[in-house]
Length: 413
Image (cartoon, rainbow, N blue to C red; front, side):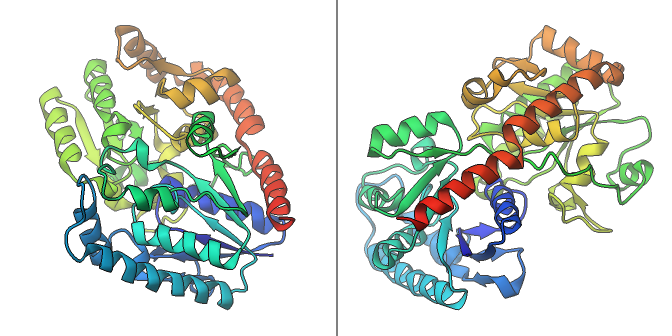
């Protein structure tokens, strides 16, 4: 069958783009064709339809977002603008499904969090009008973000984020979300955790270690502590800075791989000031990172960075799941994890051997990290154990089984 993925963007290293690519890989292994509808795309042009208004950074969507949140009534003319863009996107979706003969639609977070309100409304209307079998993949919901508040937008949110319609199979990435959508909407959602292809051999390096370090501005003997996340407050990056500060070793260099994304630069600037105050060598290298696998001579991929890292920090305050944790385990790297709620509920019980913290970088945590940095071989047994556990719980076999069941289910009605 032909599967149509729909979102604001399928490009770069954000969690939705990465997880969508994994779903597509598994579906393609089963013989399905995958196609892409979005506002920003890094997939082949002959299998994609790019509509600029679908991206949350399109000027009209930026204007709408500035006007509709944290208010009780919409400014004059905004409702008309929403309807106009919604109609444009609805027509574009119709063209996309006709052009690629789409059998099943998979909205990726687009009817979950209202980064692009007209897109979510257009998808909902299209599903309702066409009756197309749909698997809605929900990563994070609007009520989890303070910025999506205000009475004015509530009718739209209730209509489409998510829509409660027959023919939609709803998928969430953790048990807390499954409970929440059941309580709010009476929806019985399927839980599909984020995954990694643990059967794939480790990628071969494109550069020598020395060449890579030099390209990143590091010297032989430096230790690379990698924070492989976006620069947003919920990632708790101030804890990574505190760890580097308390380790007190000038060889330690803290690198952040992703950019600030859609939440502005205030937090990035705060981190830079904090690192300066704490005398931590902090490097923002997102301009040098292309994606998980899309590196070249000038830019690194995440797969290039992970093997260079001596240690991974993942001190998030909140995560829908935690791709960076699976990536660290895949590359057999020691990692510090803040025990965010989804980790405690859905991951910790699997039996991983990790360095964990409870909202604070304690002396005990610092000493555990120091021991691993001083004696990397001491982590080898734990790294292999973690890899085997992750492969069993969060590998492609799990995703393959659940996708087959869902595709079969939506096609049978």
